[in-house]
Image 1 (cartoon, rainbow over the protein chains, first blue to last red):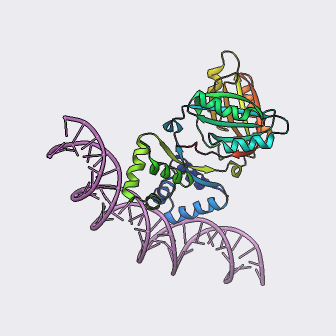
Image 2 (cartoon, each protein chain N blue to C red):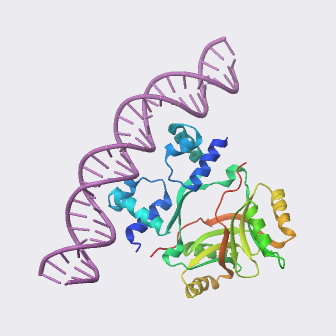
Length: 145
Length: 145
DNA sequence: CCGTATGACCGACGACATTGACCAGCTGTT
DNA sequence: AACAGCTGGTCAATGTCGTCGGTCATACGG
């Protein structure tokens, strides 16, 4: 269903999604109409969900990055979820099993801002914050084999 | 340094990084050479770190996604970091402050596989795993204002 | 007040994407 | 066994797009 060539195309686009069809064609040994058709099918099937861009938040002053675990107080789950979605400094959030209901990624410019954001949650939830020091594994794909 | 137009370009590429220069030019009211030049400068300055693609891991059988907190045993920090990097099912990993030294995202096909992966770490670290049930906030940008 | 740096525009040319006509290889049917 | 239909590919023509060189306006500093 997704063969070696599809995987090669995905890897190539993972590295640089602006590669031309022609370049992808050469990489894969196909013609560019074929590549175009394969991408269309990958999109259609939902494998390829979108083409996007990687931005460095530090360039906008976000010096601090934190992983926040959030445990809503009884009855506050919905409200906490709404709040997290509404605070744009949260750039990612997963709802998970376990005591911590949410695990979110937070970007802030300073400790003061960190405090401000967490205070907003404090009346509805307990939070546990870990500052990111380094990112040993950058976003990558699991093996497609 | 990064003006409104740059931000507009970034947002447009965040939504679809394969947009043509011409389309970006129309969006921004500039000519395509100008857009090209702006993208070049954004890349040069490291604001725009790359063009990539979003893939649905479920299409490759990865039914389960987990957030794993990892606390290495004394003296095992380096070894644990190496292991996480070497296990491709970990698709993201941050080294953080606090008791948990690492927080990582893990994709697996089944509970058995989850167990197998965590066992590899078990002789060097304690782990705490939360299964992702839902993702209320998908990867997005913090405000650029 | 002039010289320069910056960031934009335009037009031409070469590169690229898209389209339509066609073909090869399978698969299942009569 | 022959054939229809489907899939996934090629090629070539056409039109769109990106790039490059040259030009121009504006803002800033000497």
